[in-house]
Picture 1: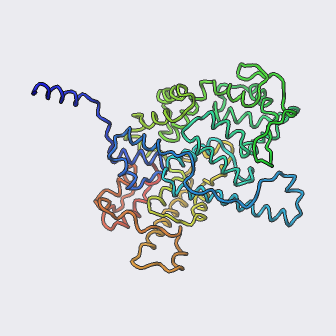
Picture 2 (picture 1 turned 180 degrees about the vertical axis):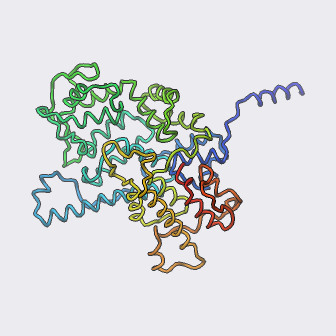
Picture 3 (picture 1 turned 90 degrees about the vertical axis):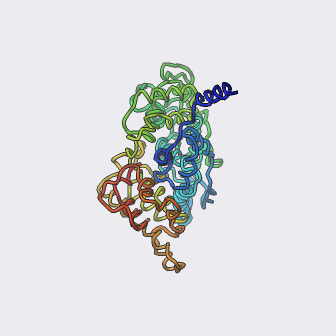
Length: 469
């Protein structure tokens, strides 16, 4: 019996134990996969898990669809000829309602970010929005912008091949990159160029100008049917002759060309490098990104295994990697409002602050999207970031009174009605907890971080260390 127990104990010891997750590591994981400022309850939820189980929980929690109802739009998409044929009053009314729809699309996405049970989903949607760039004012219709947004959510960590094709034949991208103007007697290279340069291979990587010209011929005949708001292939406008693209020759159409592009090993490298910069580090790590690219290729562009491997990477988990990425305006605003318990902020003001900080949802600066990094920190935007944090703090502070606020007081709140102060309970009050919760690195300023809780929180919000994740 004793010998049996000794053997049994030895077997138990020999079984590999799940890698535990510390508070700091849980915070880092949630900050990078969310909006930079995880809530105490979100950290508590994964602390009992091993590290790998925590990663799995985040990835398995991606639902593929929105948590909040899609808005009802006031206009139906119409082509320019139909709008032009309206009388002046009808045209102005249509344009006014359409402008309101575009604004509502922005407001809806902000609400979705604030309320989502899966912050990682919306971070991936934001990543794809900055990868497959389109601008809502050129797209014109809010419902088409949200249709594209839904594709990003549907394939957030899924099949990149399906995402590429679905986005490419969607009306938002076709209008933005002038794909519907591509005719056999006058090929438009704009769409073909961005497919290779920005979406799949990377600028100057593995293709030639002749490849772009040839693939542009393959995309001829693509149209939008405004009656159905769907992609339509017009055979009479299509160049029905052989093209040579990336070394292959045939009577290719646009989908054929995308399949040829996806056969190139460089596509997986490009995606791995871009996801690495987004979630891990702006510093390249060729050995790690090559390893991750192999996983993408092995799983035929299903991105979930690669994304899991990225978050499991020792480089991602390295404490020296914390606090090395600057929060985008969307991350700063959404993360702060979620942390402070702002359940029903005034969305118009949230959007206005994001725009003033340099990130206007559905309106990136150009086809290359927002550059990120230090580009977020100009003299003007740094001031606006500080002003936002003060206003967000004051909104909660004003609401947290012993009596109910009057209607007039509620209207004066910077971001609307907040929940009662969410950072009061249990161990939150322990010395040092708030600093560990709110900052990825040690504070920069020599302020007091003990004493009255509200003052500590304000000092932490305004410390430069709060700007990074």
